[in-house]
Length: 244
Image (cartoon, rainbow, N blue to C red; front, side):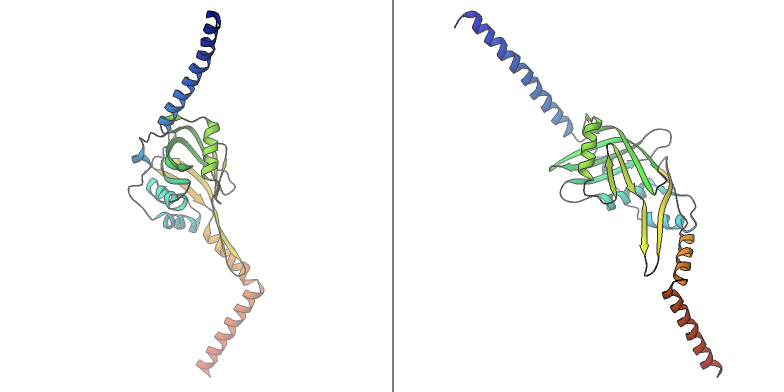
C-alpha cells in the first residue's frame, strides 16, 4: 500500500472516529446531567395539610373567592396524582409566586429511570371548568429540556390519567366534579384561579345554587312528587293520631 493511500485511510478513519467520539462523549455528558438530582428537597413534601377539601367546600357554598395555601395544594397534588409504582409522577411541589414565574419541581420515572425535573409554571382557568398549566424553561436534572422533549415526557407521564391531558408543554386539568343522585345531580366546578405569593386565589360556582336547582328538579320529578305525597300523608296520619 502506497504512502498516499495509507494517509488517505487515516484521514477517513479520523473523520469517522472523531465525530463518533464527540457524539459518545456528548451523550455521556447529557446522561450524567439528566441523572443529576440536586433538587430533592424541592420536590419532597415535608408537611401535609389536609384541609384542601374543607376550604374548597367553604368557598363553594356561596361561590365566593377563597385561598388555598401552597401546602394545601402540594398535599392535594401528591395524594391525587402521584404514583408509587411503575412509570409516572412520584413527587411534585409547586412554588407559587405573583410577580415572577411560579415554579414546579417533580420526580418522574420514565422507563424505570428516576429523573428530577423543574420548570417555570403559569396557571389559569380557561372558563370551561378546566385548569391550564403552561410549562417553560424546563430542566431534566441539570440539562435544559427542549420543548419537543418536554412534550414527550409530559405525554408519557400523563398518558394514563383520566383527568390530565398533555398537549405539547401545556397540561389541561379537569376541574369539575359531578355528584349523581337518583334523579338529579350537583356539579362543582372551578371558575377562576390565579397564583399569588404562596397561595392560589380560587372561585367555584355556588354549590348552594346548584343544590337548590337539584332540589327543585327532584321535587318536580315523579319520584320527588311521590316522596312529597308520602311525607304529607305521613304527617296527616300523625296529626290524626294526635288529635283524634
